[in-house]
Length: 447
Length: 163
Image 1 (cartoon, rainbow over the protein chains, first blue to last red):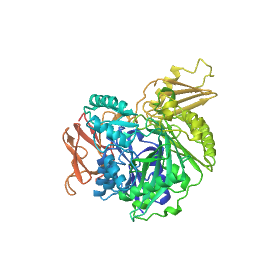
Image 2 (image 1 turned 180 degrees about the vertical axis):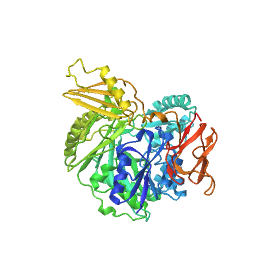
Image 3 (image 1 turned 180 degrees about the horizontal axis):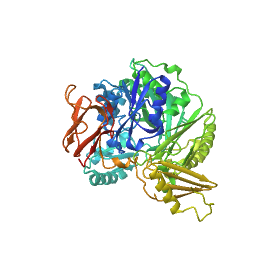
Image 4 (image 1 turned 90 degrees about the vertical axis):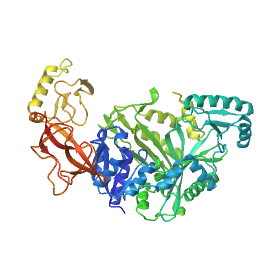
């Protein structure tokens, strides 16, 4: 096991990693920007170094300063957390060339899976279904129609150079396809200077189901079952849960095995998440791999009883996984609500400010992962998540009850938060019934 | 000090607040927290929040006044040091006072430096970076020992620009 590691992150995930290290007897070196100076969680690290002014690009993302802090802190490894440099293959490679272990996958596997095209190729090689699509760019109408018929309507026309949903059109038949392509091309040309388009099957009312995996350096790959993250707003996850409600057992098994298959094919090590979309018929399609520990990892920790961060450290230090696939069982149901400093009444605009009073909920099956405290100043420089509230109960119904109770106890005075929106979602019949899709929140609460 | 009987008219007694601030400065106090009955006055100078406002609270209500008197973000240096310029580290690394172990230090107390004068080396990732003073004047203090780790923004030297 490492003697000392550097935590290359901030806020709640930095605190999470420090906590795992303290239990393992591993010393920690924390880094902070000038905006985070004085944050209480830093006191739990053995050493802490300032790496720059508030802006992330001038501090947490400064590779040379992070590595320097690792050197003067005399660490053997760096845990990158999530966000920031966690999926930066270049940073990963630099760590290793400086003889510092990177607590995560190897940089080659990270690079391969970070490229969406490469990842899809690997998925196909592993026998994992992907969203059917045109193999390359669509250049003429006849080709478009033929491809669309092969894929199956409805199809989604996407701009090759695009992003942010621009240059995207849905077409349900041949006739609609013609005009949709023309419109998409025009929009793509205007937005990106490139009219190239390709086709993908349009999966209607998709659910987002992802599989937590972990692999050691001895060839062992294990999945820790799935999480349902369908509750999203503008592609940002709002509520996550495990097990995925109303997922047929054979679909659940197939999904999780597909994830393991992909991870083995990619020679991926340490923790990661394989994301899928699932249609109402139970067909699932690979989307992408998140080659890092994720925000919602505690959901899996609660249903499996396994500490994922500790396991990451074990794997990175060369130990074999302390469990086999047969040992991984889930009990009960867990929910997580991401508590953000945002104003639900005004388009969820971020609300930085001082937390005048924080009261943390407790009781059976309640967990609050947060770096916030009374007097903590939420600064405008980083993402607005101030904590994750989790519950774990024997059934999903009880878990929803417990989460409502816990949200009611949570007091964050001085700033606006998304607590009220979480309560509205939990009270909604569709959420209880599990009849939701990834656009549910945006449709139900537009604006 | 806040010895008048509280009534709704006295809460914003600027004269008293100004007296408190003057007293704080005279005695170099960074925080004063006074309570009487339902009134509480708390004044904090500088500290972890930039420009912490004056706080006057009465029975659960909070009134915030603009900073009265001298409120400065950051710790207030003693009056005699206010004109000194601090050379801060622009990077994370290991501080070296001299170009090599046996050589004389780049900048010791009493030395005069110009903007471009190298005052130290900070080693980061095996690269030895020469750090310029970026201020002209006389070195009055060397704050770090050779071989010590330094973080971004750490004070390295104090320079008197008047010399």
